[in-house]
Amino acid sequence: MWEEPNISGKNGSGTIFFSGCVLRCEYCQNHVISKSYCGKPVDSDSLIELIKALEADGVHNINLVSPTPYYPIIIKALEKYKPSVPVVCNTSGYERVETLKALEGLIDIYLPDFKYSQNDTAEKYSFAPDYPQVALEAIKEMYRQVGLPQHNENAMMTRGVMIRHLILPNNIDNSYGVLELIADNFPSDIYVSLMAQYFPTGKETHSELGRKITQEEYEKVSSYMLLLGLENGFVQELEAADKGYVPDWNML
Image 1 (tube, helix red, strand yellow):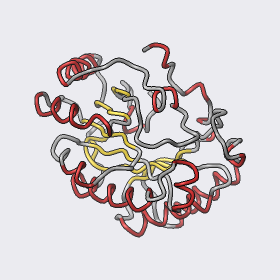
Image 2 (cartoon, helix red, strand yellow; image 1 turned 90 degrees about the horizontal axis):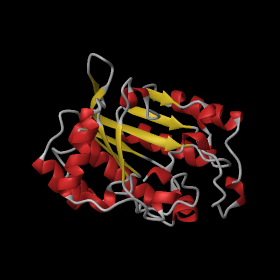
Image 3 (cartoon, one colour; image 1 turned 60 degrees about the horizontal axis):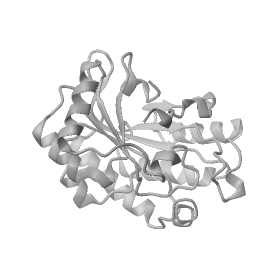
Image 4 (spheres, rainbow, N blue to C red; image 1 turned 135 degrees about the horizontal axis):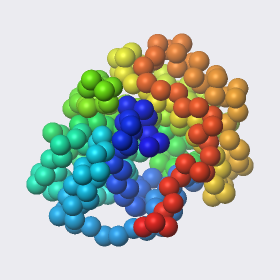
């Protein structure tokens, strides 16, 4: 229930979390699955069964979270069975364009992160110095495939790209840069989801990440987004910076 309003709606988003993220962000709030590979193995047929079970629960969409290493299985599953609700690709943004092209026609909604505008920051926190360039080209390809967000009569997103950005403490210049890249490369009515949910997990190795973002940081970045003309989308409340919103991975 904790995705953006046009993704979660009243019935919730049918999330399927994949372990083993392609990035190694030191501050990851889902480090239990991103780095520890918990969960259970599935093949394309058992993935289809998971999708069907979520559909039966009445979810608004099938939300594939951090799916990048598993695209061959996902493609095979979606070629066999196309759900009756939109399929969401919920990704770090660190994607190969040629891989995304293989997903064309199978994904309805792309929900990518755009984490960094600065190469040194991307290397420092996620060991991916080419992240800004890779993510920008990847999101351009996502936009080519599905375009601007479209919604149904219930204000639920049915197609399109919505770009997420997580504000990090002591890094508002990085956030400014990300918003500038979005404004310079996409239509002004692109949806941007500005996220304020950062909190330290104790896994950080850089001291500047050892606190939540401040009210001042939050207001500066959200104001700059509007100043750039990016008025569509969502700005997450500071109250979201709470570990209570992290799923209980022990249920797996």
